Image 1 (cartoon, rainbow, N blue to C red):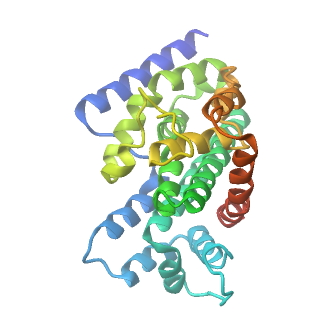
Image 2: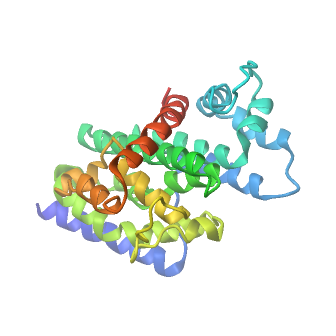
Length: 286
C-alpha cells in the first residue's frame, strides 16, 4: 500500500507539473493521430499526403477502407479498395476520429497487467460506443454535423485514456484498481481539458465539454453538448471507471433527461439511431 501511495503521489506531481508548464508528454501511440490531425487542419495539405500517413499504419488503413465501405457511408455499394479513395469517402472529420480510435486501441493493449488491459479495453469499447451513438443521434436529429458529433464523442473520455497510458510508468497503481479509479476521477477533468487544448480542436467541440453544466435539459438534444451527454447515457458498454467507483446510475440519469417526452418517441429515436450506431461500431472495432 505504501508503494501505491508513493507512486500515486509521484504520478500526481508529474501531471501537475506538466499542466502548470503547459506541456503534456503524449504516448507514442498518439503520434499518428496527431500527425493526421495537423495535416487535416492545414489547408495546404493534399489528400495524397494525408493518405500516405494513413498507409503507414496498417491497422488504420484497413479500418479506413472498412469504414468507407460501410453501408452508412457508401449506400450505393461501390467497392472501395484504395486508401486515397477511402479517405475521400469518409471525410477528414471521421478520419481524425478513426485515427484516435486506433491509437486508443493500441494504448489499451500496451499494459503489462491483465487488470489494466481489461480496464483500458473496456474504456476503448465504451468510447467507441459513445462516438457511434453521438454520430447516430446527430444524423437522425439533423441538428449537429454527425462527423463533428462522432469526434466529440470519441474525445469525451480523453483524460482517462491519457492517464491510463501514462500509468504504465507507475506499475504499483495496477495493484489496487479501485484506488486507481479514484485517482483518475480526481485528474480526469483537468487532464482532459489540457489534452483537448493540445489537440487544438475547434471551439464547437471544446464548448461541448461543459463539466460544470453537462446537460441543458432540452429534448430532443439540439446542441453538441447535449447529444454527446445523451450518447454517453445511451451507450450500452459501461465506462469501467464508473463501474469501479460504483457509479451505475446511467439508466436513472437517462430517465430523468427524457422525463418530459413520450417514452414511445424516445424509443423510436433510439431504434432509428441503433442501426447507424452498429454500422460504425462494426467499422471501427472489426
